[in-house]
Image (cartoon, rainbow, N blue to C red; front, side):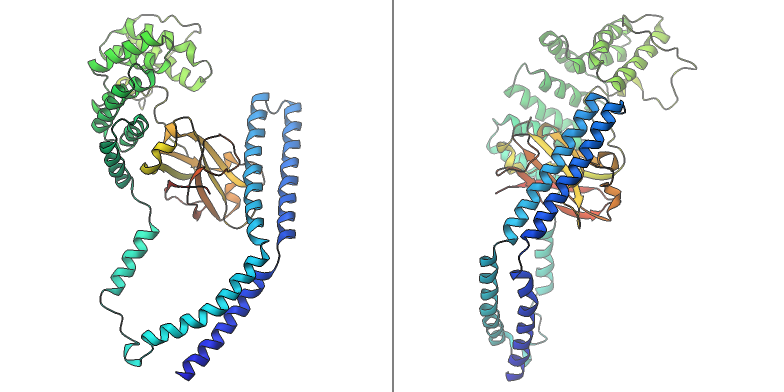
Length: 437
């Protein structure tokens, strides 16, 4: 035992000697330098943006967006640096920690020796120990699957069925999982709780249509008629109503609906272009003409061979390919549904694992979009020299801000940050399941 205690004491002294410099040294000056560095970089980038705007290389709208993104990045950077500085400057806490280690570690070693120090027990692992350790590691090291979260949300809604936010989230999750019949039931319940709400009714039509393989059923047609009566400029409803009419060979009716939707998509040129192609297809096969303000381009050789069939055409607001980059899927823990509203802002970001804490890429969504998939890539860089591909390892996280502010605030909901390679092909799953203190 004397030999054991002697060796243990020596190891403890070495450990404390290694920990002491780290715990006791002050880092305030280093954090101040980091803070000034990030502010200086942000100012330089803002000057570049202003210069590009004056030259006409950036429109006023693009300049405003870029400036807002820069402010988001700087705010998160300064918040992280400030929090780190507060922890690292507490010298009294560090000394107390060191004292606790110096006293408690020898006592722990002695107590452990009293329990397992006999030689006959040195190589005994204990029944079932490896399996228990593995189980404990798996339980603590893995996020629950989407299916598990769905089951938890279903249980909560059984106990509290009068929860529209919960039914909306459940419906969207079912749609992501391609469980369209279940999604339709969830949206039907939501429609009962929130009658005459165009967004709810359109979501129900979308689920019913996907359940039928893309064909809008009669119930969906009736719902769309009600939506258009409530809101004659409901673009998605007009688009889907046109789809339903085209599926039934009611060409003039389809053109009427789409002609109403076309000018409403003026700020979405890609969607307007897609609708123009659909109108052109109907015109080509029927000889009818749509009443739209802009002429349609001629169709040469018909539609491309890979063009989706008319019945499967997506309406505005439905899920689209998320593009190339670091694939991230974000979901909200069912237990936190009551703490958020659909319009709360969701920030999804990536920052260097070892380097400046300023985000390398940020995507902004709403709680209504959850669960959501995004691709973080170099196009979302806050500054040209701070791109995602410039760093081998990154931390990816998500945060819900009720105020919509970029600066993290107490009470914000957030996920754990996950470290990964910046060029990883594996999709990351983030679960927003904790509250910022």
